[in-house]
Length: 408
Picture 1: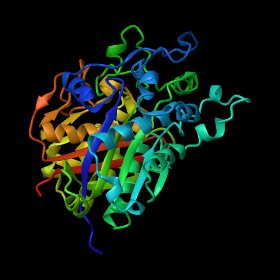
Picture 2: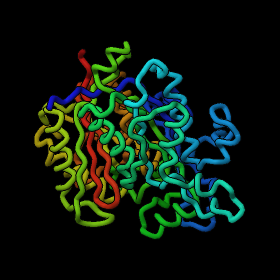
Picture 3: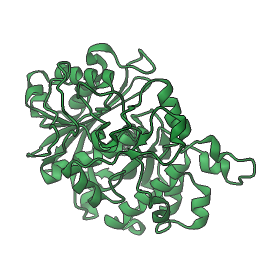
Picture 4: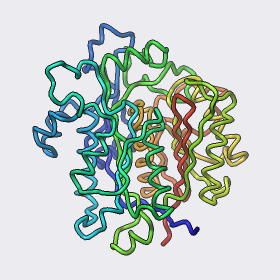
């Protein structure tokens, strides 16, 4: 069976740095931090008192895109997903009325299961079940835009958004879909989430300097910072995009999803499982390791992940690893759980289009176990023809995407 080429034709992005794609990109380039003292839980009750929350005006901002009834029926993550979808359609209008919507799907990744929070499950809450259904994120978008193709939510922990993109890629490549609205959204900064990650010693407690707390690959990293955000894209076959006259941004050349089947929280030592995933993605794309220019790292700012990912990149790329720029956007926006892979996918596309690698901020003390070029503190202009985006999650879920400059 001939595989169809898959391309990206639209993007939307919301993080703690901004409520639209353009605002985010300018701050990513400038190396700004979106980490602040937390406001969405009683910080006196947890050792960690910081987070990368969405702009305080987000709740009011949602009203520009959704009815009051919809807001009552949906979680914060669901509202975020709908805003992203509306921004995507408004900015890159595909002319849905003229397309076969039975062949357009919607696949959303979320690690927070749609926004579950015990505080939201009141006994007198009519919409509690609907609001907290994990599938609601994708279902509402499909209902809004009449998308009748494959529609569901993916949960593979911190690899959820990345897996959603990979599943859509596969469905389009095989001919089962022509197009998809796909990505991830997570907005579950609350007491339960912060407390839970504190219990397993995963979060930074650098409360006196929030903007400096997330420091991937730095020797003095002490855990990740919980974030909120999301990113969506239009993925479609090259044939479909050209037929409707769309501007093609980049080629989504390859994808791999694996599981290390070893530990519920930790990757294999030496980055062996991560390397296998990167190698499989390059093989799927038909790209040699020597062609890779840039890697958007999972880069969580935890000891084990950053060390293993660095080792995995060396195993996968060999000598090429010394010449590849590697950066972590989580240094600026924290870790948005299931949305992280989708956010980083969008930023990687922007990096390729703009010829600019975003920085890894707060990189101060090199770690001998993390010895790659992490684009420290200041972004870099560079031509990027081939890029990889890594996402790794609890449970051993590993995902790598390979993007290639589109040459028509």
